[in-house]
Length: 361
Length: 194
Image (tube, one colour):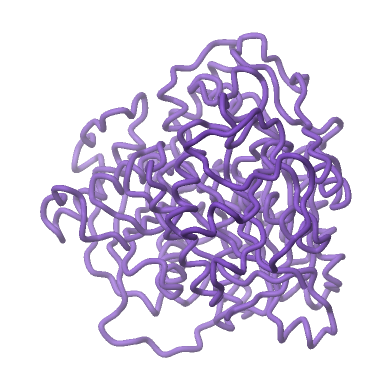
């Protein structure tokens, strides 16, 4: 078993700033969607998103998140100077320069990698950093990810009719119509158990496993049988030596898109067998929206916070069951955690899939 | 450079290039519009895989654990600029621009065409694009999530350091015939090791 310590974390979304704001909102099932005022949506089909008022620019928000996560992890100047940055953001020619500036401002060792793989960017960054730590090539790493709702991606999702026409994100629900975008900025410090012990630092949680796999199916549609995501889940469980019965929660990728949510339910059935019908599942995208490149880190942080609290967040805006999604959804209120491990799942265009497996400290 | 020497765990099975100045415009890819970027990625990938494996499998099969890693700094510059101008002008975009809005999409096309079921990743280089890509491929293979990786490096004209023409390089990577010595460390520009 290759457990990697989660030494510190920081998070901002439309649910609020900081860990307490995320946790209280997801346990209450309080969605943060409202009409977009950040830019003009007058020419769009849908005019709703989960945006945080008074948000700064993405580089500034990322710098704050990285600094806060390092502080929570107890990293002083010497530790930071030997810790590299793994960054997940939307691709742009200016990104490498911004990444270098972010690492320098935080006193980090440099930029190890920049992930621009759409909605698996952040989770792929976590997996790569964990892999290098598990093999002793790094003692620790900072992973940062960010997306703030902006007009170009909003227009693209609107043009693709991917946004929920009724203005509500309803993952796994009957009559779901699509996703809604949301702000997300997060940072996480991963550290080997040996390094954490040497510093006498107690992790908040443990990253026990990770897996990635592709669908080999279509440029932007998921395989209906969820085969790539099923293999990613299987890889994460096998790496940790954890059985499906030890899962107490799944924070699903589910966006509220009819086809994608059904494919994810099929993946869970394939990977977990009978456990898929009884493990508690929710998609916190139902409250904070889809943070695209940052979604994997935002949702991992919320999953870790839920495990630490021993309570599981709600799958909000649920109207009733869809026979294509036969899951034990958390819809009536928060649940108590009943088994130690949780999965955070993400999927993206290109048939890309990731699974991250965590447990409480 | 900002990475890494784990490329020592990777062997190159085959490689190919597509230089538009010499090879001409890449063939059109169904469903991808407006820009040469996605056809360029597809052309160099098809050339590399075709020279090594022959025709795509019918039905796609056999290479379920081959991953795809695309390294690009500029990405699809032409489409991004079209989107920026259209949105700034208050216009509406065609739906195909949504489907090709991230570089994952062309990798999904290639994965379906060649039956490649390994991880799908796009990264922006922090130093040498090939070195970054080999390093990422090494991580995927060391983890056991991929047995081989098709690495593609692609830039449209206008990118920093280019020679004024679209160009792409594809490398089919696998484990070397002989295991490389263990103990490589991630390395940073100043020569520090983590």
